[in-house]
Amino acid sequence: MAYIICGHDISSFTDERKLTICYQYKEGGELIWFNVLALNIGLLVIFPIIIIQAMWVRKKTLRLPEPSGARELKSEPLDHKPEGKQIPFNVLVIGDSAAAGVGVSTQSDALTGKLYQALSQSLGESFAVSVTLHARTGLASSDIIALLKHEQSLRYQVIVVSIGVNDVTRFITLTKWRNNLRQIHHILLQKFLCEQSQQALIIYSAVPPMHAFPAIPQPLRFMLGQRASLLNRVLASTIGILPYSRLLQLNIVNVKGEATAELMAEDGFHPSSVGYALWADQIVTLVRKEQKGGVEGENRRAH
Image (tube, rainbow, N blue to C red; front, side):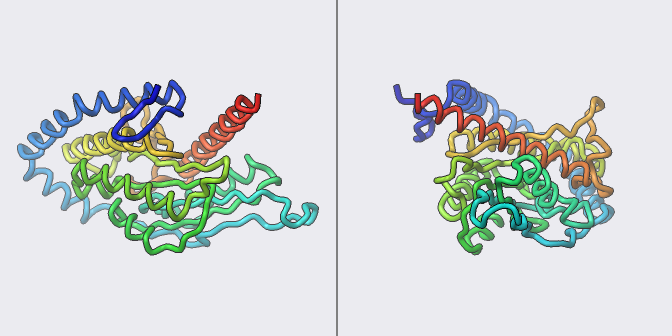
């Protein structure tokens, strides 16, 4: 029996993932446009306050630079390992200021450095790990498309995508957001993902919970949080049917509904070193889970 959603055949997916995708599309079709309408009406009512607060945030919020340090980290060859015996494990990180590491002073404390450290420790000496960063402050999804088109085509086992916050603040339409996600995914498959690898994976980090960002005053914080939630629902339903894709959602909110202080940088927008370490650990956990699932699937087919 074939399972077709939006022209995509998901027959080969697990039953759990099929149910998740069907639920996301059902939920999206029934509720998301009502939520958009309600949010837009609310925005019109408090528009003058939103504009004033947005100008205040832009003027008063601490602007942190991108961290210094190498944007490509590679494992050193091991003397006791014959040359060429280590398995290449290449990772690409693309995206906005969070991907770029804003919030810490060096790349070793940012996502790139923390991810390199966590992967090297988790995978062990059998793998030659490399992590490459293509990210810049202020990039939205449309900017990522332009960036990827101009980058040299190289193949990676895992790609991590961090986008969305700048799309929220630019009030991108949900249709444009969905189209941009599809275009980004197409370029990644075409130019960057090593589809022949058993580890092939594209990880999309969810838009962070902006309703919990301490640097944003209310009601602006609520409006941006609602927009982020809508973009996340479209993100989940879009990548749910795209090959090799997985969604990563980080829980950075405490019991009070606020972002956990130790996970946030001093500007109240970006992750701290602890936040980046958590992010990297969650990526590694997802990678290892997918690796295990792939091996088990191969074993089942072999028997």
